[in-house]
Image 1 (tube, one colour):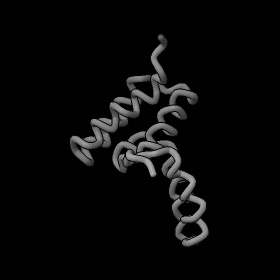
Image 2 (cartoon, one colour):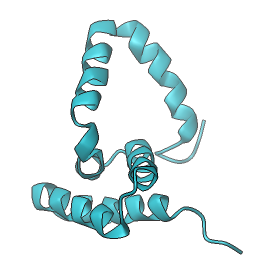
Image 3 (cartoon, helix red, strand yellow):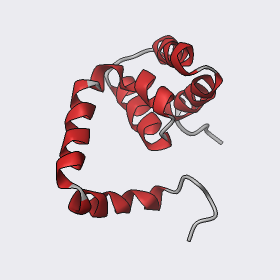
Image 4 (cartoon, one colour):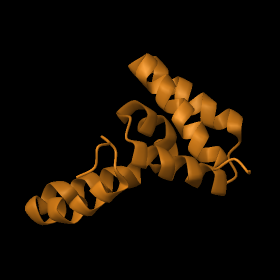
Length: 101
């Protein structure tokens, strides 16, 4: 077992979750499709590190700017206060990717 609260290996449990609650799981997937455009702000609000990484990288691939990532995180901060702002910093880290060297 990992010593970290957020371990990428935990994502394997999603298969179990889908099997245990198929209707709810499908509803969750459909909700994700609806909110996809504002995913970065929502990920900052829900504070899911996996969503942050996926939406930050998706925003970059779609041509978003660093400024837009920050704007989305501050929108979420207005809804959730400080926690969203700190997760916005994490989204920016994922957006920028690893530092060379």
